[in-house]
Length: 111
Length: 111
Image (tube, rainbow over all chains, first blue to last red):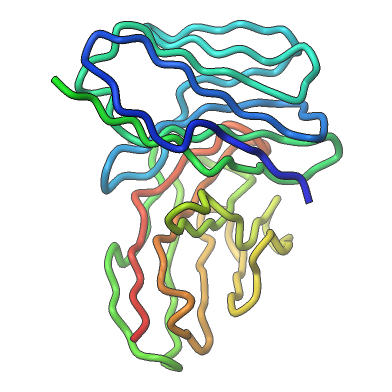
């Protein structure tokens, strides 16, 4: 089945640093989504991407839908303590009736 | 308030004792889904439903059942739970396939 490889699996950064994470697949995806999960909560949608090459921002977050349609990137600028959590990418492949999720990137911020 | 609710939030049970986790959404969404989250594996889909009386298997359906008799409700049934079903479970709903809204999660422990 379709799979997403998300990296890195974990990140330890200093407050104020920028963060980059990505998601790749061996097959083409029509939609890319980025979610954040806070401890003890369900994932919350951050950004949705629907078109190859699309670049979308949500505050300090920016995500891009790769031109090849096989990858997506999420950047967080000037990280703050509330950015801590697990970030998941998700995608809908061509002809698929469901979303596939990456394994997640756990972000830890040292004050 | 638009939301997805799950009950119970926490459950400890024993092997073989049938249980049901309820899920309800108040957004009139057609698409609903159940996921399980395990460390290092991200979110894996168990079952999904594209509308009332329409359900289909996700990636890990073994040992689970679902029903969709009403649009707002999508219960997850474990007929004979086993320890390998110990996990964190999330219900999600969306107007279409994408941009899913997640519930708060149900932490299940099967002894």
